[in-house]
Length: 144
Image 1 (cartoon, rainbow, N blue to C red):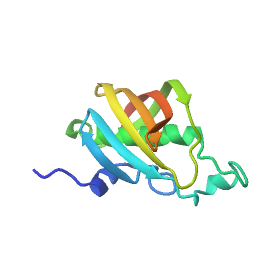
Image 2 (cartoon, one colour):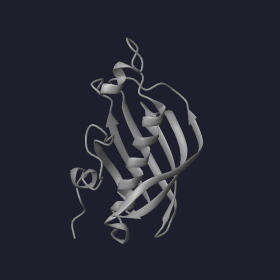
Image 3 (spheres, rainbow, N blue to C red):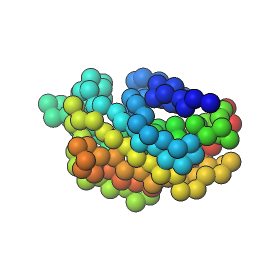
Image 4 (cartoon, rainbow, N blue to C red):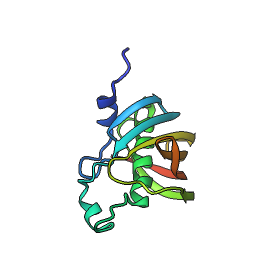
């Protein structure tokens, strides 16, 4: 069986623009880990107000982007096909640098625990190899 390509993996997400923050998947192991990326274009509508004349990609959206990347790793595992991963909580969040238009956010998520009901993942987002955000993400899996 052929491995899915990047577009097929991104299409596993229930999210659609303008609220999808994964452009491509570079590496993944279903149910275990993923490396994905999102290019901040500057055209995101919320950047007009965050902050006028000095756009900064919001930290909470960085968390969302990492969670979406993690969701792909979960949904790529056949055991969880047809489930809806939902944010259940977040721990140990740290933002280390600002993310701005033109930056490419590279997200790595390692799933720590995964069950039929949900799990935890350790996530890191970098820009140019420098850590922008780190967090431990909790998610629940709902029936669609």
